[in-house]
Image (cartoon, rainbow, N blue to C red; front, side, top):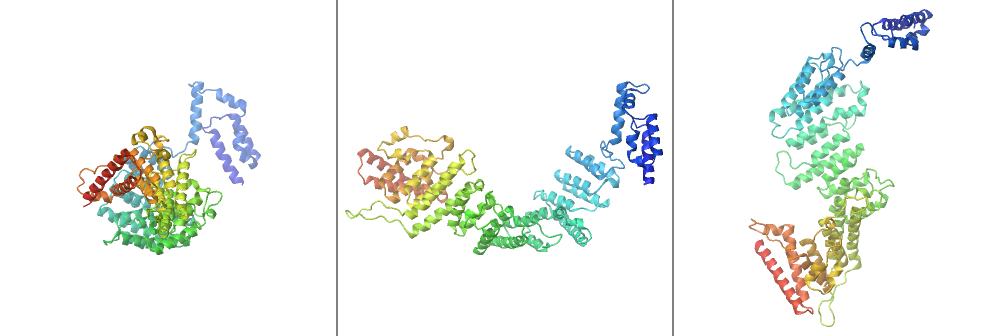
Amino acid sequence: MASCSRSSLLSATKFLYSPHNPLHSPRAGLRLRAATEAGPSYARNAATVARPNKAEAKGLKDRPTDGQTEKTANFKSSQRRYALVRRPDVTDGHARPSQRPYGVAIQVEKLLKAGQLDEAVKMVSSAPVSSQNAVVWTLLVKQAFADKVPNRAFKLFSDMKKRGFQPTARTYATLFSGYNGLSESELTDKQWERIEALWGQYQAYLESIRSQEEQDAALHSSSHHDNILSPYVPFLELLGKRGLHDRIMTLFEEIEESGLLARDKYVYTTFLLQVVQRTGLDGKMDSLDVVRIRNAEDTQVIASKMQAAGVIDSFALTAILRGLVKGTEAHHRFGYDLVAATVGDISKPDELVNAKGHTFVKLEHRSLDLILELCCVMRKHEVAANLFDGLKRSAAKRILTRSHVDYALDALAYEAAEAEQATPLVPEQSQANGEPMETTPSTDLQSYSKRALEILEYAVIQGYGDHPMEILPNRATYNRVLVTAWRCGDWVSAARTVELMTGLDLSQFRQPRAPSWFRRNIAPQKSKDKIIGLDAQSMGYLVRTANKLRDNSAIRVAVRLFDYSGFSTFFSTPRKGARRLGQEVRTSEGFYQFRLAAAIQESAIVLMDSQLTPEQRADYKALLEQVKDVKERLKAHER
C-alpha cells in the first residue's frame, strides 16, 4: 500500500509542476508536500489537496503570462486542458504508431463513405501491424465488392492473409455476399473457382472452431454462433444461382444438428427458400410437376428437422407451406398437421387466437394466405371459410387482406358447386300448359351465397372505414361472389353484389321504361373512385342467374342493365394482329364474352315469348341479332 501511495504521489507531483498544469502555484506545491509528509492516508486525495483555493484559482485565471493578453492566456489554457484528454486515435487521415485498430476502422469508414477506397487502402497498408486486424481489412473487401471490382476485393483478402491476419466468419460472409451480388455474366468460371476455394477455407475455419469448442467457452454465445454460420446464407444463394440444387441438400445433411455448429433458424430458412424456389434439378430435364414434388419432399425433410429443433417461426412456416402446397396429398397432410402443431387447431378458429390477437406461432398475412390455400387444395373448404369468419371476429382481424377474402370466397364457391350437384335446380312443370315455371332454390344451397355476400360486405365496410384495412375488393372479388350466387340460384345476393360494385340501384330497372330513359335518369350512388365497372364475366353471371331461375322480372332487369351499360362495354373488337381469335377465346376475356352472348340470347328468346309492345319486341329482336353476330364471330375465329 505504501509503495502504491508513493507512486501515486510521484505522479501527482510531476503533473503539478509540469508546464501542462494550468493551476500551477507554489502554495499548491506546499500543500502537496504537506500531504506527502502526513502519510499515505492522504494519497487518494492528492489531486484534491493540490488544487488551489478559489482565490488562488481566480488569481491564476486573471494573470496573463508575459507577452499574452488575458483572452489569449485563457484560450491557450483551455487548449492545454483539451490536449490532456484528447483521444489519441483521432487523427487526420494518418495512422499513429500507437493507434488501435478500432481507431483505424473509424477512419477507414469515413474514407469509404467519401468514396476514397484508394486512400483507405493506402492508409491501412502503411499503418503498423498492431493497428490492423481482420475487421479493418474486411471493410476494404466489402467496399471493393460494392464498387463492382471483385478482383481487387480478392486481392485485398489475399493481402490480409499475407500480413498474418486470419479471416473471421464475418470476412467469409462478406466475400460470399459480394460474389452473390454479381450478375450471371460477371460470375465467371474463374470467379467460381475462387468461391469454391474460399468455401474450402471456410470449412477449415469451422474445423478449427470445432476443435476449440471445449476450450473456449465464449464461443457458446448466441451472437458468436450466428456469426460462425452466417457465410452459409450467401453461399447457398450462390448455389441456387449456379443451379447446383442437389448440392444444397448435401450441405444440409452435413451440418450438425447439435452443438456449437448446429443449424439455426436462419440457416434452416435459407435452405428452405432455396428449395422452394427451385425450378429444375441438376442435369435433368424434368417437368415442373416432378420438380415441385421433389421440392415438397426436401421441404418436408427440412421442416421435420426444424420442428424437432423448435425453431419454426412465422417466416419459416410460410416458406414450408409454400413448398408443401405444390406437392402430393401426403405432403398436404404433413403441412396441415404442422399448422396444427405450430399455429393451433384451425378447425376451431374461435379458440385459435387469444385476447391479444396472437397464436402460438404468430399468424401473418403471408402464412395465412398459404394456410387458406392449403385448405382449398385439400378440399377442406368449410375449414377455410370458418377460419376467415373466426379471424374477422377476433383481435387478429387486422392481418386480413383481400387475398384472404378471395380464398374464403373460393372455398364457398367450391362448396356451392358440390351442393348444387347434390341438389340440382330443376324447373317444376305447371299443370295447366306444361310450360316451365320459376324455380325455387333450396334454402340450404342459398346459405353459401349469403355467406359470400356477408364476407363481401365486411370487406367493403372495413376497406372504407375510419381505420381502413387492405381488404377492399376488386373486380375479381366481386365476380367470385357472383359465381356463388349463380350456382345457388340466388338473385337477391347477385343483385346486391352488382349494387355494391357499381353503385347502381337495380330496383330502378324494374320500371317499364324505354332504354333511353334509364340512361338519362339513373346514375351511380357512389363516387367514381369507389365504382368498379361491370365486365363480360360479372354481367354474364348476373344474366345467367336470372335465366337459371326463369324469373322474367329478374331477366328484364338484367337485360336493361346490359343495355344501360352499353353493348361495346362487353363485346370489344378483336385485337389487331390476332390471326386466330381461338387464342383470345381461350383467354378469360374471350371466353366470358361468348358466355355472355349466349346468356343474352337466351334471355331475349324468353322475353320475346311474353306479352310485349311492338316497340319492345323490335328492341329485343335487334338485341337478339346483335348477340347472334357476336357468337358467330367468336365461333369463326375459334375455328
